[in-house]
Image (cartoon, rainbow, N blue to C red; front, side, top):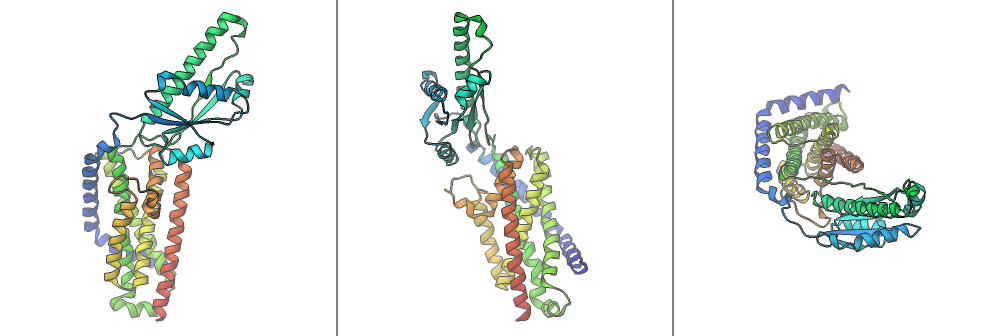
Length: 377
């Protein structure tokens, strides 16, 4: 622990000595965020919209579900705002929603008819949507609400006309569970993208921080020092991860106060993502340095990786890359931060944090192995 602590303190002092450069970079990224957020904000606004594609599927064992969906999809009043499509299964429908081929999916469970008959006339329509825009939510909510209200009113008229003592039974339909509806703005999107880009520069900390022990005058001393390779790596990784975390937290504070970025009620989760992604960047820089054993090559590779990961992760421009974005660790950190900001998909956030932690462990292992070989060379 003493050796780890020594490397930790040394790395912090070195980072503190270069604080001016880090501060300037931080302010530059805040400025870039403002420019991108304002310039591309219109891409996240929908003044006009096409029909919302709504898929539907009934898993109902009775006839009530099929009747409900047939009448809903056949209502002429909804034809101008929604286009209904029957899907084979709930899983197939969700896949189409995720691929943005459908704006939302309506699912009636297998007990839909039974619930209408036995649960006080209450049944549930599940609605799934994963669009950033709130337009889909508004349209689907209005369509389902409007139809349900009309159906309930029709039932009430029939009941009053036939028998008053049946008024205790209702065919009201409870709806709806909307998943992952996000009111995305340009400022929010690019604040997350530039935050990750800023953190990714931590790879420079990792590469320069470990280069002294394996390049130049300190190389021979490092070989003879009574320490384990992993102790040096863990000490420096911990220190520089803390530095990038503070830098990221300051970015969040500045953008929150100056730009009104709502970092959400799940701020601890967002900060955890910032710390883990910063640690990933440090471990990436260390791994590249120990493998190449050349500072010039390392710097070139890091620059390419920074731009490539940020582009694939949608940091520069929000475009559909048809799955290629999943190559970039920025994508997993971005989705985790969006989950924290919007308070949805928290299971995805924790899963992505786990993926990043696994990458950190793998890169740290690579660094330890590569550095050990360097010492015995």
